[in-house]
Length: 190
Image 1 (tube, helix red, strand yellow):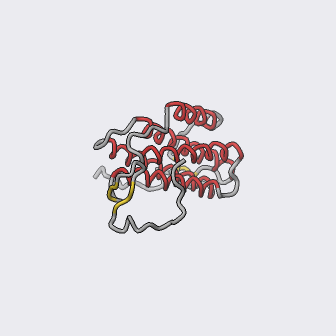
Image 2 (image 1 turned 90 degrees about the vertical axis):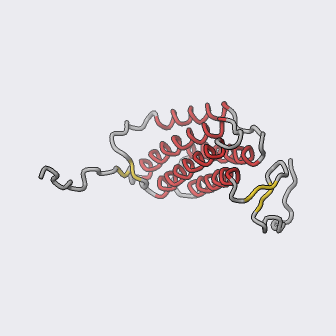
Image 3 (image 1 turned 180 degrees about the horizontal axis):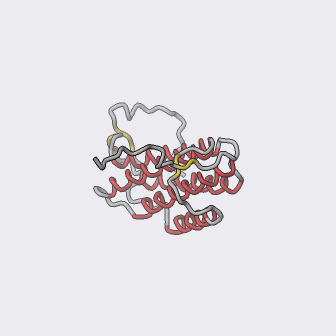
């Protein structure tokens, strides 16, 4: 185990830099810091979801495992050359996704974020997950990054979408469907 923080502030970042896990220093606005920072933000949004009422034990168990994975993924991104997320983590996400998706009715319409507080938090986590994936892709264009972090985040965003559907239905609010026919289109025939 690495050093534990006994003093929270160090003043070493006052110049706009931060230390990576390998001891090197980079700008706080670097692509690498953006990537692992967004993964940390994602983990926080999942924590917010888990703090809401009405999260079933099976959803709670799956998302708690995801939080541990995300901490590992952030560590991998913080330490250049480190490998902490592997194919078995992605396989587990896919199996969890299939298990939660199987009883849901097929989608025929787009779903709007909402459907109760837990589902709305799930949708927020999904959008932060998509941003984290984009940040990892941006980083991979300029630095050597393994494919597993990007693949993990891609599957996780799908899982969060499905879990949001599950949570909306379980809450009694139901899914909020996009009503594409709600507006009258102007007659363009002339």
